[in-house]
Length: 377
Image (cartoon, rainbow, N blue to C red; front, side, top):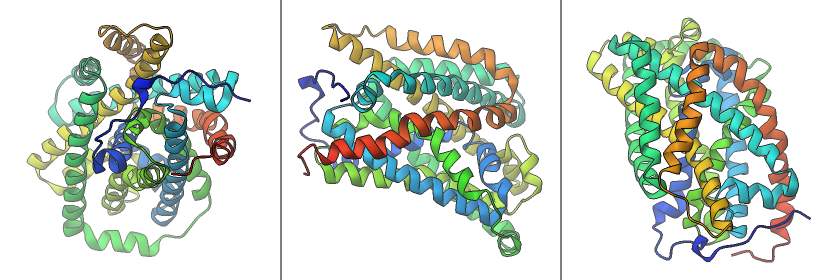
């Protein structure tokens, strides 16, 4: 039987959490942690979806969205029921002594994603603003370290606000693209076939991105009932995939030539021809890079804070940015590998760790323990 860690009274959910905090905030945090690992630039969408063909890519996205929703619903309820609002407590409760296997997988992905963020920021600095590659890397990773200093409440506010800006910008991109290239989108979809590989790619993409569910655990503390947890989890999948879907339809107009672009977003923005919108879009995208890096490291900080709490101590404020700077320093060593190589070589390999140490256990052990918990509210 997996052992449970001590439950602390300060982990009880807030008494006056809003409807937004209970139903939408966990999914918003999830989306914020997903987007910048390559999805925001379009490179990840090409690698896992559009490379299969326009129709097969859509089918693969549907698979990923379904897996995200199901696993997030189970995870949020498990976290609520056992007051496991950071991944250490969550996986100790779920996996018992085997829980470090998840942490190893998570930390490996964290370093890879931070490197992707740095590479994406450098590419944006060069291609959009004509600045040195190193300046983009420094600004993005430096902003991550600064935001970590302020803790959970500030991060929640920043993620929520920036996510609404993100949805708006992606919607404008799609509308503008359809106005300019609508017939090309229709012909690309009409001429495409549902080729093989879409189901497995959907599982692979969903797998490693479910690290974002671990990032969102700190927002689950607002949830009070099983219904709220399951609803928030089911909404997390569509909330996480919506910007990608908007982006995908805009990219289809430029298939197949766009699949060879390092930053497909720049290719589309240049095709639209508005320098002003290109700058606005890339500023919003740059913010998503900061969001994802912050979210992934914040999950580690919450795990460290919980360890201190179990020992009767509080976490000094300087430790949060210090942990971030340590990971960011490692990421700087990997960033020169480049955006395309990092996504192609790293993500596909690490996916299976999340499938084995997270998806399968939470949908088997996790659901079994919830069924026997005796609580259904």
